[in-house]
Image 1 (cartoon, rainbow, N blue to C red):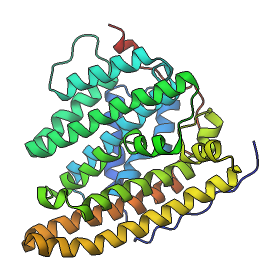
Image 2: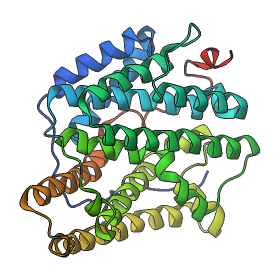
Image 3: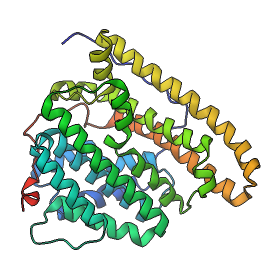
Length: 335
C-alpha cells in the first residue's frame, strides 16, 4: 500500500454539541443491549467508543431528549446494519441481502414481526413505532420511502462486492447518498424541528441543491476519514478508491481530489442558500415558513460540521474491524 496522508477538511460552520449527550449515551446503550444489537463486553466497549450519542448530539444540537434519543437509536441501528453489509454474511450473499430488504420493507409497511424476527428487525420496528408517534403522515411516508431506497441500493453494493467490481465514479456518486443513509438522516432534521418544509420550497432548485450538496459533503468527509478502515477491510465503496481505480492517479492525488470536492460542494451549497431568499420572494412565502425552512437549512449545516467533528472523535475509523469480527444477524433472514 503506498504511503499517503489525509487532509483536514475545512467546513466553515460552528462546532456545536447538544447538552443532553450524556443522558442519550446511557439511553442508547441500554436500548441496543435490550434489543441484543450488542452483546458482551467487547461489543459494548466498541459501541461506546464509536459513540453514536455523540454523533447525534453534534448533528442535532438543539434537539429535545425524546427526539435526540430516537436519532441516536436510529444511527446506532444504521451502523449495526451497515456492518452486516461490510463485514458479515449478508454483505457477500445477494440472496440474503434481498431477503433482508424484503423483510425491512414489510416492517416499514407496519406488518407484525413473526417468530423468526431477531434483533435487527425488532430494532427497526421499535424505531418505526416511536417515529410514527412524533411525525406527520407525510413525513413518515417520505422517510420510509427514503429508507427503502437505501435498502434497495444496498443490493447494488452487495452485487459489486460479490463480483469484485469497483464502480465507476458516476455510478458511485449516484448511489452513495443512499449507501450512507443520507436522505432519511436528513429527514430527521424536520422531525427535530417539528416542521415540514412546504412542498413548493422542497422542490425548488435552491433547496434541492442545498440538500444534495450537503449530503455529498458528508459522504466525501466519510470517505476521507474512513479510508484507512476501508483499505484495511478490503472495501472499495469509497470515493477515494473509486477515483484511484478509474483515473489511474496516485492514491494521494485521489485523496486531494475528494478533499477538493468538499470545498466545491460547500461553495455550491452557499450559493444556493443565497438563491433561496429570492425563491421565498417568488413564492410569496410567509414569515413562519421562511423561518422554519431556514431552521432546516441550519440543520444541514449542523450535519456537515457535526459529522466532521464526530469523525475526528469516534473510534469507528481508528479501530477498524475485519470481516468476520462482527455478530451476524442472517439467521433471522433464513425462513
